[in-house]
Length: 132
Image (tube, rainbow, N blue to C red):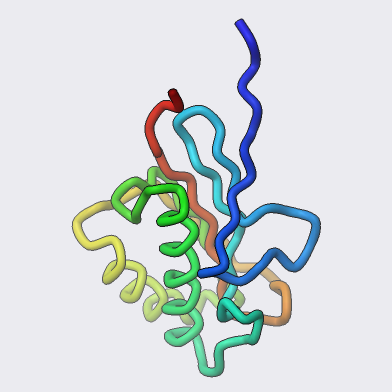
């Protein structure tokens, strides 16, 4: 049996990677997104607080998922990194808007610092079906 090779995925509908990594990687029936921060597709940082930043992160994640033929309903695991846990309730309300009744597994971690000093970063794992 041959080992499956990971397939990097990119889209111009989300910001380009700001380091030596891919926006996402497909392997088998899974898609692993890199952490998305609130950068617009042109690479500029969205202005505003936790609400504006969280919405931009979800726009980026939806674009990366769409490039793989997937959507938020395909997500099986989310990892949320937040700068200030005191903003968790506001972030959580926005998170719930995007996922609705779909409730993937999730971890949320308060961190000391995120790239570009943003307030939130989210990464996802999605089930995208078995490759042919």
